[in-house]
Image 1 (spheres, rainbow, N blue to C red):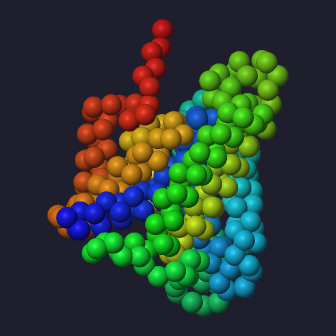
Image 2: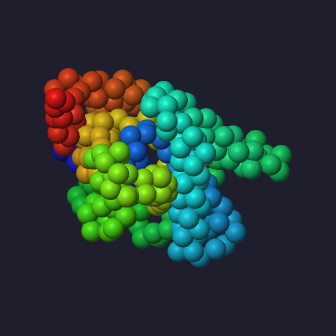
Image 3: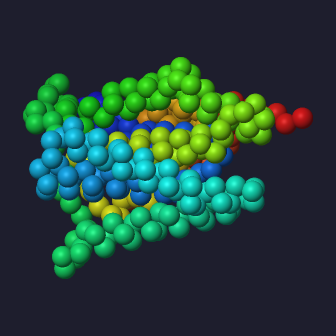
Length: 296
């Protein structure tokens, strides 16, 4: 019983990280129709830059977080301007995928060079806990506050983004562009600027996720691709581009991975994750929260 409860809790904690990364993916895809392969690398930047500013440079925690999210938001905006916008007339998703993949490679290579510039071979950093409280015990279940806090953070962040999309002027503009980009442009909406906002918001979410999840994932220049893949699976299970989809999909994926590790072995986590994705796609191709779209 306690093993099951522990696996469920760890699954929700891990799934919360997937949910935050997947939320950024869905924000960008909903508004622009582009899957940003550099999203996981922006999470890596959030973790690496965060631990450098906070633990190494000694900046206050809040200030370090502000600098991180501004930096990753700027990288996200530049990705749209230089890697996506110039290809917008091609209407070829393959070109967008390759261009954002190129951005991911550039970010990863640059981060590795910076992390090892003093002759070191280690591109990993230990991210200290920002919540110092010890674990809570409920029977044989141990709850670590530093990990458990990721669950409400993921929920509140998703709620904040969802509310912004429906209440803020720029958020409603993104919804309009998501529904009909050409129609939004004909009505005078600045679709080019809105696309930049979408990528900047996706970058901000990625940097925030890398920072708050740093004590769990730690900081490494190699973490980007794995997070991108897991977040994509979570978002697909939940429903692309539904904003609440990654939260649901992240919980399903995280719990599935932890149950696999507990009862079958950690080496089966990846195959089980992919099998779970295939099952969901076979039953509901649009995802758990997605809606069927009929083309007439």
